[in-house]
Image (cartoon, rainbow, N blue to C red; front, side, top):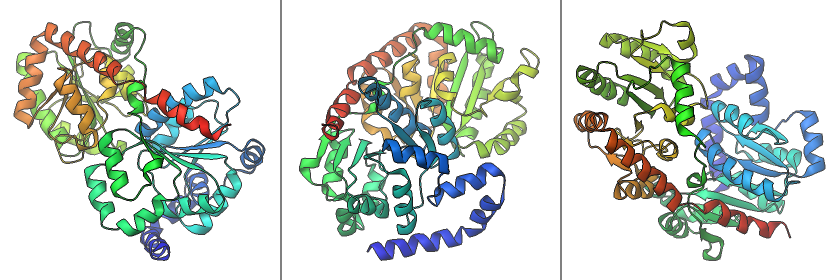
Length: 428
């Protein structure tokens, strides 16, 4: 099965080869990125890694980096001599990781999961322990770790319903792969049940909670909101809807709702943050087709005050802090069947949170927030506009929801402490 998996992955990479070639021949940053993806890390970094034998912490993109940074902050406070190497898959994740892990020995791209490449990467890094966030399960990488007797731990582990169905199709192979993971720190009982059903050994599986609940709220949310209002030229008291991590199909719905809301709230500002920055040009064209005005966040300082109805977020790593300026927040990936995105970031600022019917990736957290009166789930665009209008009319209701959101976060904290306690077994 490993041979078949490697062959299939090779065929996928060959089909993608024009992009690989362009990456290899393109700008310097991309050339360096592809060298790292084939296990070729900078020589000076390799020398350093060979000396310190770091903990290799892998986080796919921005959301996983945020969760991993919470754990790293607690663990390195307790063990100041702990050395980390951080890897990501996406460019945006890499940029955020460099800011989130300033003391890491390095931030690199994760290697392609082919036998020769992963063996070369492991030989270069020489890690003492590997931490994989959420569901980053790479068969050849894990097999190489087992052969080299390098322990592997899944942190903040989760298995979505969609992933569970997909993995069950190859359960005999997946069961074999899971034997190469030494410890599973799962977010919920449901996640633990799914990983057990796929073949994980029961004695290795622990339910610890979601690390993202342990993110600390800003010391003074009001001052952060004022800072963002100045930065974005939004007047005090001017209502703001922040729509984060949106996908194609959701921007159209949000713009229809926004046009409707502007009739009652003419000074309303929409801050729109598409999940994938490469879609910005298309979203700008979409906005222009409605007759609304928009400006990119990076260009806002050069525009006239009060001239913009929509701000498009085109910078990396600012969305979480930007929720502070919201009167109401909407979490994307939820009006369409994408499983939803992180609703904890707006909650950290004590902001009321809305999301659509598709929150499968955060089913437990979203249900808990709704039950606690900390969030509202809407079924479609019409209900979204209706609930937004109701909250914009009701400052007291917004405050109550925001307070409930903060209380919901506090009630679920402790995952970081429990995970660190389990990781300490690897440092006798």
